[in-house]
Length: 560
Image (cartoon, rainbow, N blue to C red):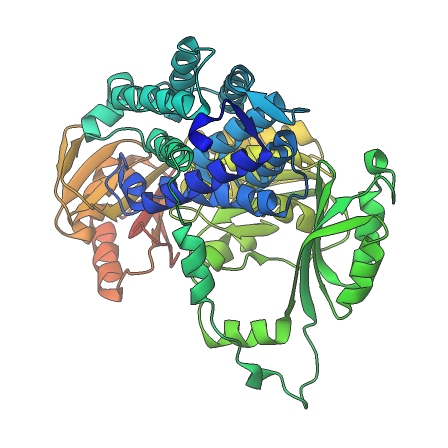
């Protein structure tokens, strides 16, 4: 009986993870809605869920039965799948847990508690400046207090019931530790997500069956292939998108000294769009090829497959042409892969206009992402592989993307990756405007990028999704707010009025120039209205416009 267990093995760990993922999924919207800024970009719950799903994919493919093997597989998948700050911190909690369980077939509660503490240590270490009143506090206080109350006769179910109780108690105190939460009238969203995951553990231990609703929904929602797009007269042009996880085998190769570069060279000889990277003894492969069997035959010389996916790209191409993909499935915009070079730059943006602008300014690869669509660490790893440079500079352009970029930089071994911690599109734009490799000195190039963002101010206009008050500004639902990164400045009923008021608040008249990026929903009448305002109010300031096409923010204002 689960409720009588005093140790945790691989099978029980697997069941608990499934319950935790399912319970978070069932409460996704509630976690997403716990957003300090009342703009329609709450995605903490989704980031945590997708991070867990990345781990779950590898956990389900894991052939090992021990607790150590199961936790390691979960950790590896989460590290690559991590999205947003909450997702990265969650992946580090599981990374430390796996480190603490290394070598164990099963764990008693003291051992598991110690591993949970190691997870907290890793999570704090992943954040340059840890802030209390966040998911970090909730994780730390819960395990510290639960372990203090440990009893030798305690069952796994009793331990996790106490762990959940301490977690909920800590979560309720987060507004007392973080003033911005108290002002907004919310608890920490990442901490809430962690509570729901742990609650799922407890439900599973209590015998409750939980279904991972999103996976089921996504599976049933997959469109039937239109086979008329590829018939007996069709000529294969695009080849096959071939992806798999390869578990290296000691009976077939030297696992500790595996020649990944040699495998990449082979893959490039039989295909293109090659991505190959290693985590532990597992290789992840992505290649577009006309001969997938050749790829698989070669790779089976080194190990065995954990997962395999082969798709006819002619069908994929026709579906892509026929309909627009959802935001989370958009392809990256990038320049063609070139030969190895010394420097390259990877950045992040949403909106076709902004992405095109960044490429024209010198970016080598623009990852589609930003608000509501945070890229994963794996997205960054794939970008690093594509640009193929000795030194790669990275502009995340979003405070919630920086940790994923940093985590990818640690994972990636083929280049020296330098993350310039740009927190918004404005800082990314300023950095790109100063991009210059002519000094041929890494430190000098990096310092120039850092200096370029110091005097940049980015303002944003977005619709409010709830009534609240921030920074002394009364905010009404469905009115338009003007703000900088963390400071609310104005809130009025009309979006162009909000942009004009924000322009004034940012003292544009005292600056050299400013730029506005119009969002996807901006109309020509709204653009013309703002142009007239600028012409009348700021005739001496250089004014530039971009049809950025970004989501969430109706207008982005970049001031230098």
